[in-house]
Length: 416
Image 1 (cartoon, helix red, strand yellow):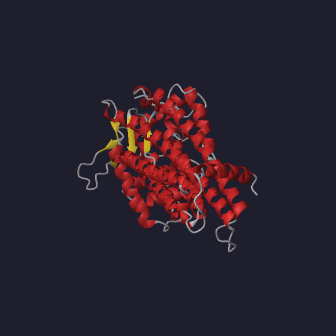
Image 2 (cartoon, rainbow, N blue to C red):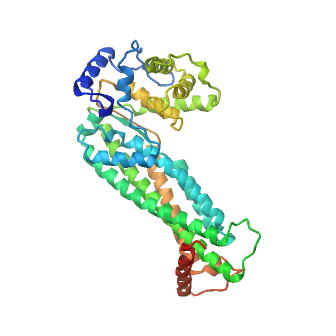
């Protein structure tokens, strides 16, 4: 079959692409030989060919451009998608968004914990609900690994659908960033105005009432942030569902189970041998990534998964931000990408969706339930604030509360 290169930056001309393709097809026969007697169900890799001067160049064609900032990488990807006609940019969508979402979750975790720590005793129950929502989001909303080639994406009619999904994700992302900045600014101004909760200074009754109203506003902004991240996650779930449907196409080779078994083996090996590997354990020609790639493939072929994990980490030190990824990248994910590309080079029609794709709807439903609980608690707190500050505040009419909140917005905006 004809192989389509996926990165125009990796080759100098169309003729060079074709030349590399022909050379590599000659090197590789069938990509997978199933070993029916294998106890763990992981198919045996074919014997790797001798080192080729084209291997690392071709593998590099399947690597997205590296960026220091995940959001910059995503914005660049969205711009490239708008003019994509052959799937060469679209095929990176899942990898780029997955890294972006992990980056967002880290910031989301930070602002949620910081906000909950600022809340007084009367709002700690609501704070715990925010923490429950955070726990579900970080533990259950993992982005699946999606691997496929550009020609398959186009031939199955996914390109235009994927473009629309990317624009939808960008819209949710812009709104999320706006709400995140609003929540962060409010929290920062609250700290400047009222100080940290560790302060021994006890405010007077009026100050306590103003602080309580500020806490309610913080909860409202944090709720909007949680709900917007849920909308973003649900939009990505819909995208994964669309990709999942092409598994049933007759001309598509579904490698999901094969990659899932490999992922499981690699994760188990990583958990057992974490911290025991070192760069000096591998003697590799530092001027040649070809030898490194073949050494890694041979480790996978021999089911020596702990060595494969250690090799990836060691090779990153020798060739930073290259085919083997960076220190921030998950070693297991890098190995899945290299394995999939190695097994399918010279072919089209291969697809793999690895990870908690079946659990996405469950996580989404649970997050929606938690958001509704937070929304109800927030409405009750805003309507009856005295029930949350019984020992401090007297009942305050709802209309007057809104007036005080508006006044508080003006006060806190100055960061006094």
